[in-house]
Each structure stands twice: as C-alpha cells, then as structure tokens.
View 1 (cartoon, one colour):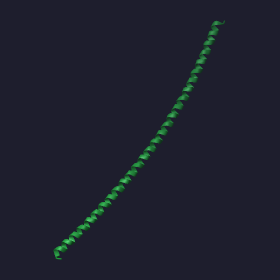
View 2 (cartoon, rainbow, N blue to C red; view 1 turned 180 degrees about the horizontal axis):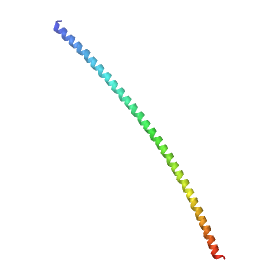
View 3 (cartoon, rainbow, N blue to C red; view 1 turned 90 degrees about the vertical axis):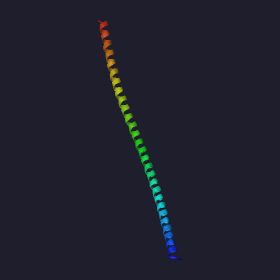
View 4 (cartoon, rainbow, N blue to C red; view 1 turned 90 degrees about the horizontal axis):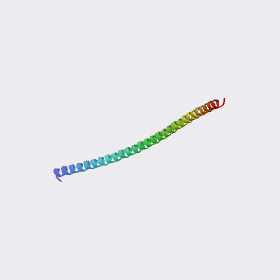
Amino acid sequence: MDVSSRVLSELASREAALDAQIEAAREEAKREVEAAEQEAARILREAEAQAQQLQTQHDQTLAGETQRIRDEARAQAQVQAADTHNRAAGRVQQAAEQILRAVLP
C-alpha cells in the first residue's frame, strides 16, 4: 500500500467517524426535542387543568353570590310587601272609621 492509499484510507476512516458523530448528535438532538415537546405538552395540560379549576371556582363563587343577592332582594321585597300591606290595612281601617262616623251620628 502506498502513501496515498494510506492517506485516502485514513481520510475515509476519519470521515466515517465524523459521520457517526454527526448521526449520534442528530439522534441526541432528536431525543432532546422530543423530550422538550413532551414537557411542553405536560405543562400545557397542567395549565389547562388549572384554568378549568379556576373557571369552576369562579362559576361556583358567582353562583353563590347570585343566590345571596337573590335572597337579599327576596327578603327586602317581603319586608316592603308587609309594610305596604300594613299601610293599606291601616288606610282601610281609617276609611272604615270615617265611613262609620259619617253614617252614624
């Protein structure tokens, strides 16, 4: 084997080694990208679950507050209705007394 053959053989061997290193680096990069994508998907799922939980809590809080407001409004309406009824009953009583005074001497 002459020198040029040895040099060519050495160069081919180095090229093959570099190709193997490049392929290994590509595979490693591919695994890292896949791991990063899986981590991103996990983070996204967790964020979506947390957002759903917050939405549920907000909906429950809103429903409770709505019910509280309705209960307060109902109680106020009942008080006002009772006051109106009492005033009307008092007026009816006054009207009856006036009628009786007018009719009876």
